[in-house]
Length: 88
Image 1 (cartoon, rainbow, N blue to C red):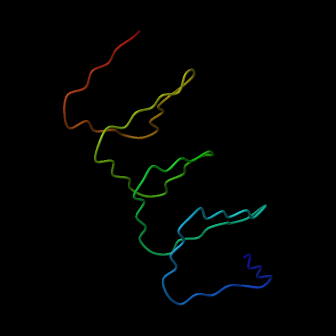
Image 2 (cartoon, one colour; image 1 turned 90 degrees about the horizontal axis):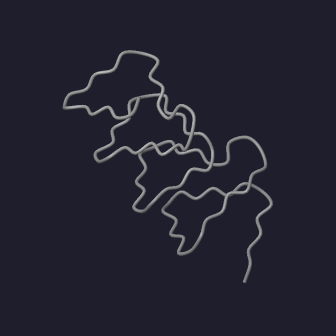
């Protein structure tokens, strides 16, 4: 059965969604997370990713752009281990 809510939905407890959650807002913020978040699987982002603070990647970072600039660093960079540079 379907449930349609035309006003705001306010849940003050945990929600368990056993299938796909689709947020289809046409403009503006469609999802705002105001506390820590854990993603247990793969997350695919179809648009730009803008991080406005520190990022920590605990495994390999792969930049696989097929042409053009794949990495642009606009401030200082520190490499704590060895670095291999291939190509021209």
